[in-house]
Image 1 (cartoon, rainbow, N blue to C red):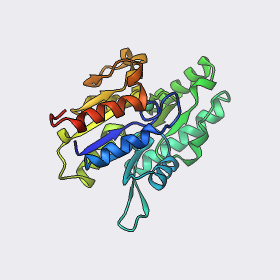
Image 2 (cartoon, helix red, strand yellow):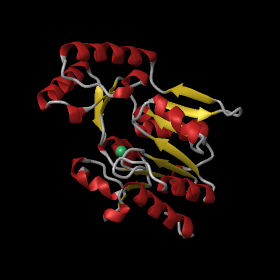
Image 3 (tube, rainbow, N blue to C red):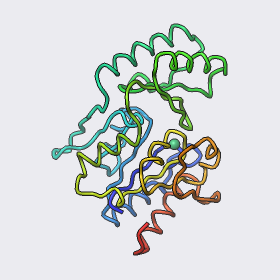
Image 4 (cartoon, helix red, strand yellow):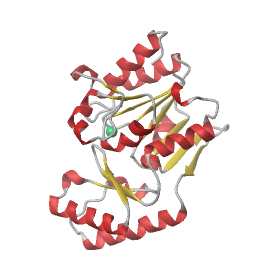
Amino acid sequence: MKIIFSDFDGTLTSNGLLGAIFFDILDVTNKMNAEFVIVSGRSISWGHFFLTHFDLNYVIMEGGGVLLYKNKFGHICEEVLVYDEDVALLEKITQKIISEVPGCVMSADSFGRKTDRAIEFSQMKKEDIDKVTKILDDSGLHYSKSNVHINFWAGDMSKYLGIKHFLKHYAPHINEEDTIFYGDAKNDESAFEGLQNTVGVSNIIKIIDELTHKPKIVLEGKENSGAAGVYMHLKEIADSSIDF
Ligand SMILES: [Mg+2]
């Protein structure tokens, strides 16, 4: 494997926490001489954090809306992957939701988001969630549920499109079959559909029936939940000469 793509929440964390095993995953990746790319629904600010404090060169954030990378001077650069008109439409509909659904709880990091917004659905009444999704449907916006948020956006973007853009422009020498993707939620489905090598960590079982496109491999057992599942699977690839 040359590139390891991975979702963050629920995939690289365990019970919501980032643990030491995350660094073991990066260590295995380094030993494989592979690139590790986090592909997350979290905001750009989180991407800055990841690139600043972890030994990573690229991250894809906001569910595929923005790619961040370190240039040759080590500076963090951003590439927005959706059109300006879509960004403007998103802001307009966000204001409509805020004014028409007072019970809507925008995620704390919505302020730092460019290409999508997120809602804390666990803190909202079902009727308010329904009102928000109706506005989104009526406006032609898209939305997806992760294990922490409902994210919404305008225009064509997905984790898979972000990964495809990354491969084409930042890693053109890498074949897609030499990459692998790990995920755990509904917002990983585009990657499960589009990529050849995909793995669901065992906690994906909670939502597996909601997926039309499931990962090729679904890990089983508590010991393969979240980051532990990624670590065990990746280590197996690293230790064996047999390809995925
Ligand atoms: Mg997740």
